[in-house]
Length: 129
Image (cartoon, rainbow, N blue to C red; front, side):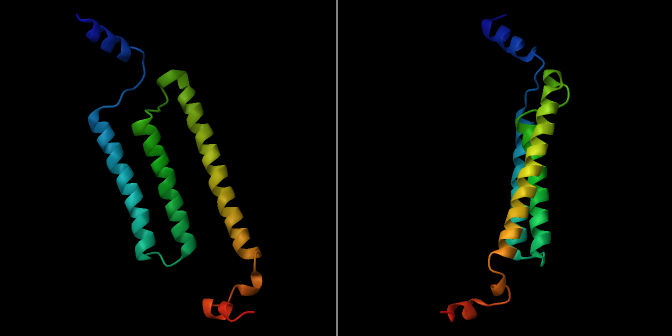
C-alpha cells in the first residue's frame, strides 16, 4: 500500500462526509435552477403582486442556502458530533433575522419617507419646484 493510498484511507476514516462529482453536479444544477427561476419571475412579471414576488424570491433564497449547506458544505446531523446541526440552526436564525429585518426596514422606509408622494407619477414629481 503506497503512502498516497494510506493518506486517502486516513482522510476518509475521519467520519466527515465527502462529496462525489455527481453530488457536486446535483448541487450545481439545483443552484442554477434556484437562481434562474426568481430571475425569470422578476424579468417576466409573472406574479403581478410585488410583495408575492419578493416572498417567493426569499423562499427560493432559503432553499438555495439549504442546497449549498447540504451539497457543498456537506452538513448533516451525523458529522462532527452534531455540531453541524447547531451551526445549521444558528445559520437559520441569522437568516431569518437578517431577511425579516431587511424587509421591515425597506417597507417602513418606503412607507414613511415621503408619504405625500405615494400617488404621484414621475411626471408630477418633475413639475415640483
